[in-house]
Image (cartoon, rainbow, N blue to C red):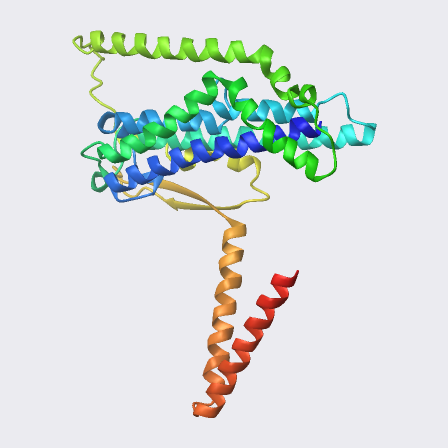
Length: 334
């Protein structure tokens, strides 16, 4: 159980270093092209930035732990440890099953969030004329994202080799706790994943073939235009917004989340504009900034009450410096 948990943990950290950096780089490329990070103003980026769309899509599938990409490999090992038959008591088994349920919920929410991000930003048509991209990301940016994409595909194509990379640090961690780590025990994660490895490799090959076939079909169909019963093109008002895409999930947790709605009612016989705006406020983030802002205001008020004479200011600064050094020494000793 411990070997499975440690191996999955270390491999998951490695995977996050690969696909999360890829997503951050892709987000930076989007910001560089559109000068905004507001999803509600983006759209249709896939036509102008196809390489960035591909990188973001693969990174999204990987971070959602969908097979056959690298996130699935590490999460499968973690789940294998949580449902291991070596759990000593029924209470421990119930606790681990509860943890597994929580992880599954987090994974589902991650898949929803990443689908929302990719769909709103890259699909459809641009929503704001001021945020339209005119060119693909620069070559150095594409090269950096391509390196991380190769890392994702390498772990997905050779998952047993990636699992083997974690054997040495896992053995060191066990020895640090005074536990022996024989070779068969360290090979347990690879043995647990071996039946799934061939399936992941086959699925990865199928995805590549489907992508190539779809690209060939799209090239052939571009020359044919089908009569669409008066339909010309989509408009931004026909598309999902980020809020509407996640509205069902937000309504489910409306009692927990801070959910705001703004209505702009139609006016006149032929109204041109009417809208409904919804927004979920991050309560944790708001509370954190509220505490920081209150602390900053408190410090400002205290500093204003200090006399402006040099001795008093010097004494206050000296006491503050002594307290800071004392806290640093105490923290270092702990």
